[in-house]
Image (cartoon, rainbow, N blue to C red; front, side, top):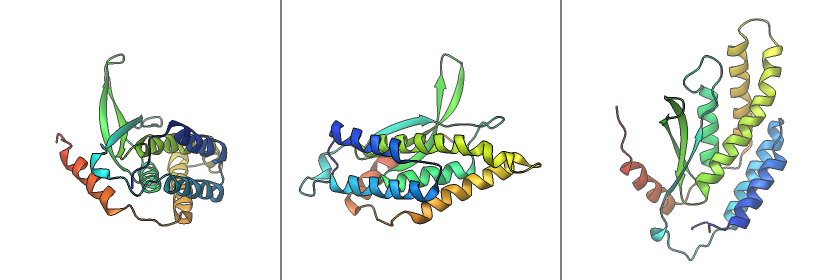
Length: 187
């Protein structure tokens, strides 16, 4: 059930995602479904996952002016990326010594190379949102940020609704669950 950490295969999926994603939700859903199929095709069912370590990959959150936290539609985007690439996510604060402050990051974790691909898909989709968000804001005269956030949520939900439903294999769920349980969180 493990996806081999084959650099050439990973780069092929990344290149496909980069070229195929657009502002059109239908096209994005088709692209992400195709990426799911490509990931399934890479599986080696005879391999034992007990020897595979859970890996993590981080990305700094894209914040908008005046926000030190993430928005609801960003959480939906995290969930969509974790669903497509069989990972889980959590939010972590990381200290940047250069600027002397904490920055919020999303951390995807799962079997390699899935976390890396989840972060990559998140970044690509955020680029699309950065491109279309100003159009959302121009379309109204009042409450621009609130309206743009609602439209971004609609856009993410539209893509999510068109994704093929597939379940994470039980062995992968157990491995990821054991890793999640080993994480320490400070209240």
